[in-house]
Image 1: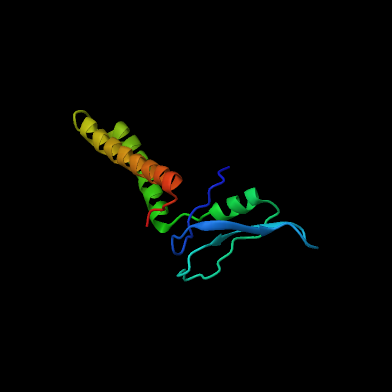
Image 2: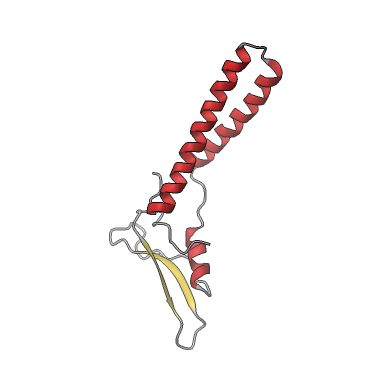
Length: 126
């Protein structure tokens, strides 16, 4: 589990872990946006018993419509590739397979580069 917080999903500002451990209450930690201009002022993640759980909760994100569409396109290309192998004769088959393979390689490279950039810089694709 990473101890690095993803940026705020609304404004892109850095996030911080807040919490308290003293007093009459049980320890509580949460992720929070640090952006002063954030449209979700004072946005807090769920309160958790440990910093690690608070980080995991803050970093949990739903897929964006763009990510869902890209995954759907990759799945469709895999299906098309399988159909081409079964139904398209050579030499056309090689050309169709190259197109599918190139498109899939591009998708994988872009999604991998985005994930690596997010890990490296905390930035998310917008």
